[in-house]
Length: 267
Image (tube, rainbow, N blue to C red; front, top):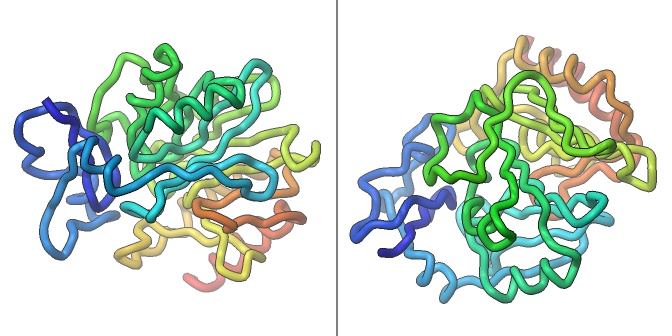
């Protein structure tokens, strides 16, 4: 039986003779069903049309599908003591990409910011012996392919290692998560935000949305909550959701200025 991947958001669904009737992530108001209707690819068809490419993204190794697929997801590797944590996920795990990951030292954990990046989390976990996949429990309802490796953590933060901390900020989703890497950016600290706080095109600010494709802004209370969650952290760099959408330095001041600018704009 094939596994199925949503062509619009990249979520993977359990195996079955026929594709799913719908993708609940795309039917949610934060996403959308493609203009030609809901379509799915088998894992085999996806791997025939796309490959996985590795590249550096401001000092972190990243991986994404080429040509771009779904919402253009890219994952980043954050160093742990004995391997790597994959931050966010991509919709495909190929033998070649798995072999390259092994050559880098192996995958020890996966952590994902929100449901639009769940992708092929089960395939990546299984390829490395069932490594844990950290998803916030508040987003449990959006898991499209349940798997034994998923750790539905609760509360406001979850520590992966002495310098890697998951932080529930909420906003885009109830369980929306950022990752703080204390030793990132050459020891100055890095914040990996996905698009919970999305780096703007000028790469000087971040902004906040409830839905990006449907142009629904986030409310003031949610933005203030994100700001309060981030404020105690030390960081000089922000990694956004797509290639090169990063703030290389001065990111903490940029984040505070972004919050003030956003709240003023929606007042």
